[in-house]
Length: 86
Length: 159
Image 1 (tube, rainbow over the protein chains, first blue to last red):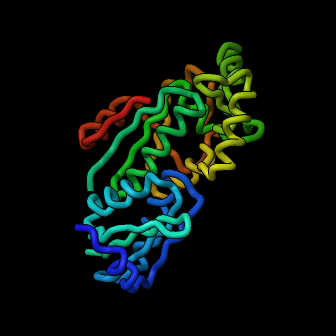
Image 2: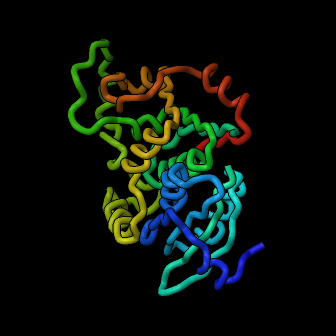
Image 3: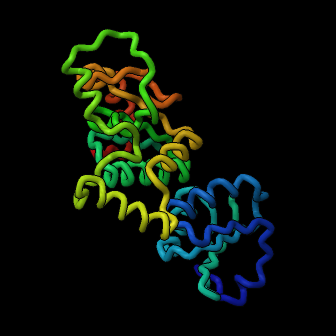
């Protein structure tokens, strides 16, 4: 289901959530806070450094009904992408 | 949307962290969360500073309990390696360096997220804790209220 790094990099993310440096449950709290401002069908990008987010953001998406698109790591940051479904 | 209920019986800093991280995580996943604070867990809800004049008469024993309990969430001991508070201080230092939220911050976030917090009035009486000593925005109830909430919940934890 995961898109390639190139595909993820090509996505337009109007909302970027910067959760770098914060630990659990910070990244999902930040995602929850910002998702409201994302139009349905658009992509949200989450930046994180806590390695747990690699599992947590997909789990959060599954629970919330959003489409998890994939992730890549670059320059010490984890970049996670999801599409708001509803 | 589903519902989670958590009974917070313990009054240790690390256990409270676990309870509030789970509660906040669930709320961030759109779950309704109710936390029921009983016995030692009530210490986490105490306000900083001197308790306001207590309207209700309390016995000497109740006053003793009240005086011995931690004054607020950040004064709770660790369940292990507390060393009269030194261990907690060290853990908080590491937490700060690692950007981990403190219990006080987790409680604030829980309130922002609309997590329902209920203080057990029976334990409040036993421990000599008055409503004036606890943080604002919480509810007061007993076992039937908790059980009613737990009936609607699909995860129930006792911490």
